[in-house]
Image 1 (cartoon, rainbow, N blue to C red):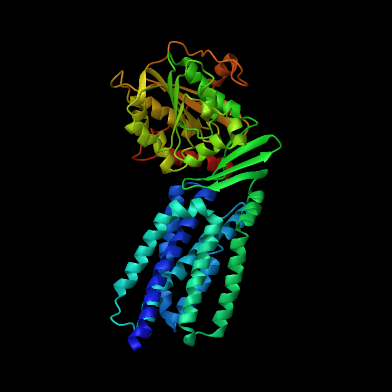
Image 2 (image 1 turned 120 degrees about the vertical axis):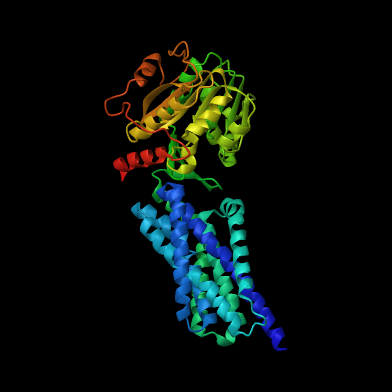
Length: 512
């Protein structure tokens, strides 16, 4: 009879190990994702979060030795995790909205969650021994813990972010910790104090109310984060998409960084698209990498000789929104509905490597190279892959950041394209043409055109109806001032990613 009473409790503690491992890793992933959204440089932030969290878990494991009653200690740790971990996202969102800074509270909360999570396994192992679990084996506890971590890592991008979002996810998994605490309180009620039950009850009420109000809290936080009314906000497995509106003015933010403002986006997109397409001897088949909002696509379709356009954007939700949402689709002139357009939602590098087609013009409209994951798409190796996709007289153009705010980064992109192997002239680099325009939302913004051979004419024949670009503004765009002109910059390679340092140093000097 004794074994029958012990077995369910032993089984529950192993199940609890699995559940708390899921919750712990979810908190870590939420913290890492939020830090990359709010602080930038996702590789650095994920690395910092991982290191701080794991080291804090080590501290928690060491601290657990001073807990006298393992079962009570485990329950108290779960209640604390339910509160601290559950309110992790709300704390960080509202702190950032109120003060514009989040690093200190982020790592303070992360340390607390890590310490509490680190206490769990030692306390569960001791609790199993205390209840007289037959044939107790510590590896069973570790196996349940590792399986929980696997489940969390798979569920986070596939289920948690798309269906819950960061705010609701944080509170939902806080509720999971509290449910673990609650069932443990009931199973081991003979050993628990009524004070623990009372604290647990208060925590449950707070978390349930928080979860019920999660969407409202998101709206309040975003209202403080953005100047204008937030009309759409979604977290996808790849990024956070936010669209705001003030009267007829619409802005798109990805991971809280502005991507366009309808007040002036035409300046950017006209400058990106029309010089390259007009200079290309033929522009029948065009490839756009990025540009999931369809604005560059809208400009491409103004050229009558374009027969096919392939647009590659990693995030399917971006292209869905700007195809199916009537208000957003109107901004790109319903460009995705044009029969000449094919959308591919995949990684740009993978597509370029696997595509067997050639393109007359390749337009690279990707996010700034603020981290290594993006820097590789501005590298010597990636440009070499793209050049292989160009037709014999093809032209490539890329957005290249600000020659004013991140001057060395801009010229690193130009230098890298100039150093890219030329398939038509072995041993030589590509012909390049840097230029820049003023976009009020971004400031002075630069682009680089590249090709194996210099086009015969660099004075483009522009389509009718453009709002900014003229032959005169195009000529002026090729002139750089003393403070934006060419400077020495290393070639950007996937071996060293010099561009990331240039980019972050430049923007930090201006805005931090």
